Length: 282
Image (cartoon, rainbow, N blue to C red; front, side):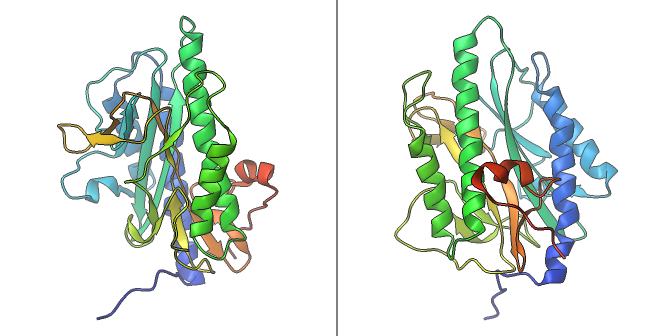
């Protein structure tokens, strides 16, 4: 049976630049709208407009049974939340996952934003710290991809970063890493082989070499790692009610180094603290 290679050619890598940038533009359109009084369906509408304005389509809507442009997860919801009439409240922690397909190629990225709340500075501080740790662990994993030989090293780097933060400086709780939900390859389809775990595994994972493109996406909680799927059959929430955070970028390894396809600067700002400089695709 024919099995598609997980490695892309240089020309295919270049074809993935535009869907990555369109995905970034969609999240840029959503970010300033994440404020108290805005409904999650309004965020979805903004993302859809940004994607279609660039001649692309939402790859989330290509997933069987899903009818929206983004996933938006609030507070104890970690991933796969469905946009609707829910109105954001002060202090909410909001994760938005989005993807675009352009000319048959895909991008996938996620951000977490905390809605300001002057009346509950402790809640905001806890949630901002959770988001910071999650985002930092994502960049640690991306940085590892620049020099690692196998994807298992990426997962180890993510876990090591989170563990190095120790318990939350604000709440005192340790952070949990979702185990059932992981990163993935990306290309002609939004979800492809190989899997990208966000924690150490005995298996070294797929070989990292030029042509590999993966979505690195740690999903971290402020408490326990156990989750359940809500009655809508999509939304993944924590069993203990602790907050969740989700950050994601699509990353390419090529002959010259790595390039973050879903970041307009290729990941330069996020990688700088790790001493890694991304190299544009030739």
